[in-house]
Length: 257
Figure 1 (tube, helix red, strand yellow):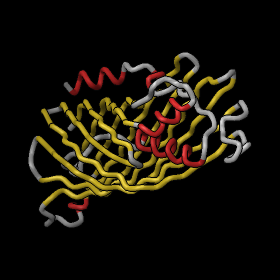
Figure 2: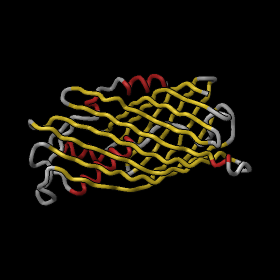
Figure 3: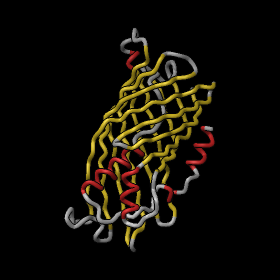
Figure 4: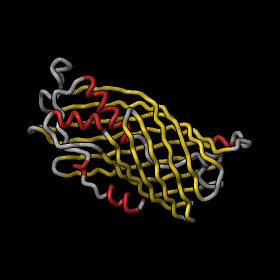
């Protein structure tokens, strides 16, 4: 089931998240756009609180997610665009664990192009397992700093619209100390900085701005819950998260130890 979900999302054409229509954008719209893309492109490695490997460890694989973006959909449909309930991401993930419970994570969404639309994204994280410092803890506890950048551009009315999103944040993760299956929960603080620009005039509400680009930053709490299953070298994972009022469901297929 996880494999089917991953393959399905990885094969989703770029336009499944794109070809919206952005017009008469207001300050409130900018907040919704920043929140929707921030929730979708926030770091998505689907890894819990335990350390990666006894001393050293690694994981490489595929991740994919679907994010409900009701507010962005309302903006698009308001201007006559096609119905847009969800946006997607699918990328290549890698993680390396080193001594002292420290691990480095990366997820890359390769540049994809289709029918005048282009999307790309990268994210990274540094995680530290606190049990290495406080070994008497009865559960796995970790802190993780995350950062992501994403760019979406598409044709509109003979011009080009570009949306750039930068997400930063920190998470606190918990999981029980049980073998093979690691359920985990977490809470985080995220900031999404979004810049929307155009080569055509009039995409912003004149009462808001007559410029050809605007930026908006939103901050909020992220909650997440997931489970990772270890089948020898194969790792399967699923995760739910919510940020800025947008829900995301993701899955992972990887190998590692």
